[in-house]
Amino acid sequence: MMGNDDLLYEYVIDELEETSLIKGLWAKAIAHSEGNNDKAKSLYIQYRVQSIKDEFNSFGINYTELEKDKLFSIIKSGFKITEETNQIKVEQEEKIEVLKKLNEEKTNNEKYGKIKGWLIFFAFLLVLWNLSQFGFVQYFTDEYISAIQNMYLSENKKMVETSGYIFYSELFTAFILFLFTLSFFSKSKITKIVAICFFITIFIIKPIQFVNLLDMFKQINEVPPIEISKIIGSLLWAFIFLLYFIFSKRVKKTFIKETKVENHIMISAIIPIILFFYYTNMISEIENKLPLTKSEKMIEQKNNIVSDNMNSSVRFGSNNTAISNKIEKNKSTLNNLSSNELDNNINKFIEAIKIRDKYLIAEFIAYPLSLHTPLPSIKNKEEFVEKFDLLFDDYLLDEISNNRGKWEKIGIKGIMFKNGDVWFDSDGSKIIAINYITKKQQNLIQLIMNKEKNYIHQSLKNYSKPLFEVYTDKHRIRVDYLENGKYRYASWKIDKTINDKPDIILTNGTIEYNGNGGTYSLYFTNGEYKYVCENNQAFSIKSYLYIYKNDELLLHSELKFD
Image (cartoon, rainbow, N blue to C red):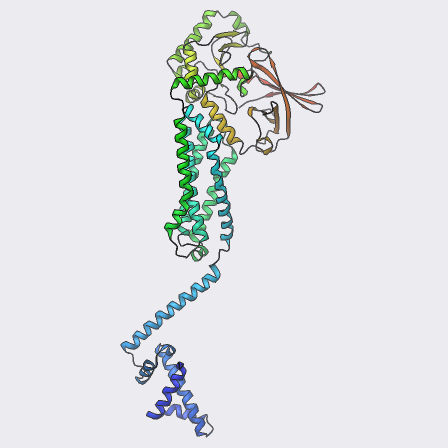
């Protein structure tokens, strides 16, 4: 096929045969031919071809794309504007635009075709986030199933709803994350939209989870700082990446591929749908296996309590301490108080129990009222009414209402009901301890313990039960019951928290009981040093820490509770 420059030379040769020479070009050719006629003709042909090219450039048509007939026709017409020439111009301009776009796409593919820049860091995060989804396994462990069962048994519907919300919200977030990951690594056009949806989901779900976290931890002194930092951190990076995906030029240029959105959605939904049905089926099985009647539940609770009394001489938590041999308060009052007066006040309490009047019962409580560790003390009547169901369940209420237990005076220690489930002070006016532990309380303690193990220092994660947390003027102290039957003592400076490494850890603790009611002291040794913790909190008597070196007292400090 002849090139378009060749066609121009062909046209000029034909023109020389058919028409006269263009005088101006011929004169220019003669002037540069040095009198050689053949050379002048050659130069004329070159000048004429160049003049035609210049005409086409001025006319706005690319002659190299024209067929012979159209090329010759335009030249012969003297480059007149016609409908045909206008159509040629439009077609060539459109072709130029197409080529321009193709070149831009080629340039963009070379620059943005691969995941680069900050997107590399984000790709790494996406991989980590997807790996973290293996954490869903925790929702199907025996521990979690047992916790859910306890929630149902204790009729803690709010905690059940909270647990369900956390699971379903995490599941929805996982679905958006999977969709985000698929679109991201396939460089789909929907990536930007999915990314925005993902980050907005984080902004909605995390604050709601924080509210639930506050509700879960309202039974203890404060929400663990690490839990707050996790949520704040999630919101912060979500905000940063949201802005990045909205305004980044790299995001706009990188994610340009056309993909089938429905395929991405279907693939992303497979695992969440499986987990959804598996979880709902698990919850249904738990509900179906619950005790059928209230009496069955009460019998189970009673058996558990009897078993606890037989197998443990001290109950779980700081509330299990008894009055020390230093008690002098109310001694004379007890000696002068008649049985009728004692019976009258206790009978009033029993009547309040019978009618389930929380506000009236609150009048019989001495505040602050200690609860089982790690729950904080109840500080006033309003808080007692709010947490009444945490302290009294149907079983205990029925036992007191029907006088199924004996009220006994235990010297100057006070008056106890049914082996210490409830303690009045020595004058029979105020309740100073409730050692009975409800299913709801057990369940809450277990949940807090599980949560606590996420942020407590690594060296303290292994324990069976927390005994108490206290502080002196200079130190923070924690004592745990270990699975080997020993007790562990951990101490920090007062400005540190339990997620810091302890300054001292002693794991050889033993316990010594003193008389009725479970009075005890804890003993720890560290070489020539001996640590003694005397805990009398439950009876509003001061507790102390003693430190000895070779039996010489070095420190005598009061232990303070929350």
